[in-house]
Structures are given as C-alpha cells and as structure tokens.
Length: 258
Length: 333
Image 1 (cartoon, rainbow over the protein chains, first blue to last red):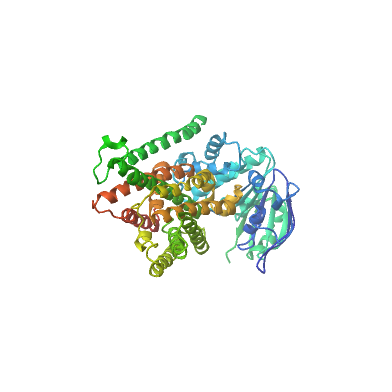
Image 2: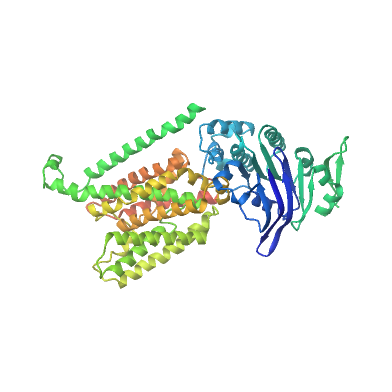
C-alpha cells in the first residue's frame, strides 16, 4: 500500500532525512521513533505530500504520491498534524465535520460525526466552541476530524498521526489506542504514527521505523526486532533497559537518569 | 440525525428571509425619513418635489448605502477567513487605504483626459489588490493577529499620506478632498454611482459560493491541502474578489471603516461561525447597518450632515478596543 525507497529530503543545504526505506501493507500500523529533531515530522510531511522529496521514491498504491491529484488524495489520506491554531469559534461538531469536506456525498456527514464524537468521548462537547476547550480536548477534536475523513473508507486509505496522544490523559490515551486498533481491524486502513512513548510501541504497532538524530534510518522491522536495549540506548544516548514480560517481548522501558 | 441535518439546512432560508425583511424595513425608513417636506400623496405625481427628492436623492442614497454595506460586510467576512484572523477589516488592514490612494492617483493622472467612473473603480481595485498582497507578504497567514494589524497600520499611514500629497498636486476641480477619502459618505450618491456599484453583485455571488472552502482555509494551508482544497488558487480568488468589492465601494463613497469588522463579528456571535452562514448574513446585516448609520449621520446634527464614516468609526473603534483587550487576555471572542 505504501512503499518508500531511499527517500531523502534536504532543506536548504541541510539533510533532514537520508535514505529512508520501508513498506507498509493494508491493516498495518507503523511507529516512527527517534529523538527530537530526527525528522519524524518531516517524514510525515513527505508522506502527506506537504513537501516534495529531494530524491527517492514514494508510492501510495503503486502510484507516485505527488502525482495523485489533490482531490483524490484527500479522500484517501487523512493527516493529524501538530495542532493548527484556529481563531474562529467553530462548534466542536462543525470542526469535526470539516473532515468530510473531500466527499461529494454529504448525506452521512452528521451521523459519522456523531459516531466519531461518541467514540472519542466528545459527545458532551459537541456544541461547545473550540476556543473554550483544553489542550487535550482540542487534540481529540482534531483527531476526530482526521478520523471522520477515513471513517467510511471502502478503498485502501492511509491515516498519518503526529503524536496523537501527546496531550491526552491516561484514560483517553487508552481510549484512542483501542479505537485505532479497532479501526485497523475493521477498515481497509494503514496508519503511520510518530510516537515518543516507547512502552506503547510494542503493543499497538506492527512495524517500527527508527530514525537517528541525523535523520538516518537506523532500523525498520517488527517492533520487537527494532526496539532492543542496545538500539534504544544508542539512539537516545542514555541507559535504557527494556522490561520483558513472560513471552519474551519488551513490555516497557526504564530509563536510567544517571 | 438526518432530521437534524434537514433542520440545519432549512433554518437558513428562514434566517435569510427575516434578515431581508429587516433590511427592507430599514430601506423604507431611509426613504421616508430626512429633512425636506415630503408629502406622500404627491409621490405618484410626475415632477412633484416629493417625487424629485425620492428619485434623485433618497432612493440612490439608500441603494448605494445598501450595496456598499453589503459589499463591505461580505468583503470583511471573506478577508477574515482567508487571513485566518477575526480582527481583519478591509479598512484596518489597508485594503481600503490602497484603494483610496490609487483612486486619488487616477483622479490626478486622468484629470486632463476626463475622469471616468469605471477607470476610477478599476484603479481603486488595483490599489486594493496591491495593499492586500503587501499585508499578506508582511503579515503572513499564521493566524497571528498582531502582525497583520501592524502591517495594516503601516500601509494605511503610507496610503493616507499619499492621498494627502496628491491633494496638493491635484488641479482642484477634479480632485475630491482628503476628507472624502478618509471619512466616507453617501452625500452625493447618484444613479450613476448605484449603476457602478451593481458590478459588485456577480463577484459577491462567487464569494458566497466559497463558504465551505473558507471554513477549511481557517485550519491553515497544510490542513486545507490535506482536505483537498487547492489553497493558492482559492485564496487568490477570495483576495481578488474582496479587493474588487472594497475597491468599488471606496471609489464611490470613500473609506468606511469597521463595517467589515463589526458585522461578521456580530453574526458569528449570534448565528455561528460557518462561512455559509457568516457570508450571506454579513452581507445583509452590512446593508442594514449602513442604512441605519447613514440615517443617523443625517439626523444627529440636522440639517447638517456628517460623513457616515465618522459614525461608523465612533461605533466600531470602541468595539475594536474591547475585542483586542479580550484577545490579549486570552478570552476568545
């Protein structure tokens, strides 16, 4: 569904991303990991066609991503960027309904919006102004907007999420993680998430991609292959110990502060 | 839920209908009220003084106030959407100033060849587009309230100084006074003015069709592109459309500030933020507001008339101050 081959991106003379290669099938969720400034968000920007790659190949369903018309792309690829600042007092449901903008058929818009709001525990806020929300609430609203865009997907679609859990409380983190897993099982969907929480990585994800501080791909594979003690300690330049459970998979990580 | 959607759709004709009703009321009052003896019995007699007053003075004036008010309300709401900034107003961010400068420039340059109302409007339109582009380049579109407003202050200052300079260079018979440009008025509204103002209508229709796109543009350029909006093209369309309407309005009546700020703001507070509502309602409410403000400007010191621009500024500036204070304290609208 998504195949990336030796992708490079330069900003001015600086290399932001170097030789990133991976592929993703329908139903898979890819975690993008790496320290601050490793180019994780830049990679997401390339995948959502915000930027053109400097070199390399980027294909969505065997088609060059940047050659797919905007109208087609928007019906198949949904993006949650780091939050845009909006100064207008839209109601929560109005903002979420914007996720249906790419579609000609609007008859289901309101029922889809209600379903998504319900799934994200936002129904009570439906008629509130977005300007009155807390950071965590607003993050869920923007997530809801991205989810409505792929909610009724019948053809392979892609969901790109930049730190979807960053301002959520623990209960809502679990809620969102479970929802995304259910969507992957139910819909013809692939997801790419930039994440920081390492303990989440092995549980929710089918693939992991690790970027170094220099934007070089360090590893790509199943999370248990990629997220080893040595690779993580080298990557974050700190002593990281994986916590294993009975079946030998890493369940979490303990970082030594020394 | 389906019934709810239908309700959302069906409430709009009722809303628009009642606003149009209020407008026609204001329009009727604007024809009826004013100094000069009007006897309604004589209205249907040809060449009666009543008929002349209504036909030559009050009717064009009410029509022009309605058209300019509607245009400025619509241009204000559109410009706010495209700048992602609810405090933008065509006059505050320099579009009207640019239009006034270019209109004044045209009067000076073309005075020997004979001034033409169409040329004046086209020139004002170009000035408006230029000023908007400048604000966009300086202020950007990052929902940053202050840079856009500061850029507007600078551009306004340059433009009004330019108008002032031109007033010294101009042969006096053709040039309108600096105060005409700075404080708009409907004082000399003529049938010809109304004819020129009608040109705004097709452009207004195009802007009205862009309501949903403007909603999406408020999210930001990248997000809008993710949702399938051809950002650069649509933005250019809105800017050209708004500058066109503002340019025509300024060339006919001078700068009338704050209509484009007050009206969309009130509409959003009472009727919601979606541009499919904000754009048409701002249009009708803009027409109502300027009809009322024009009547007020004729009535307050009657028989002396004050420019309607003064009334609007006295009304709008305090509201603007309140809005800025709210924003800086982080209270949203």
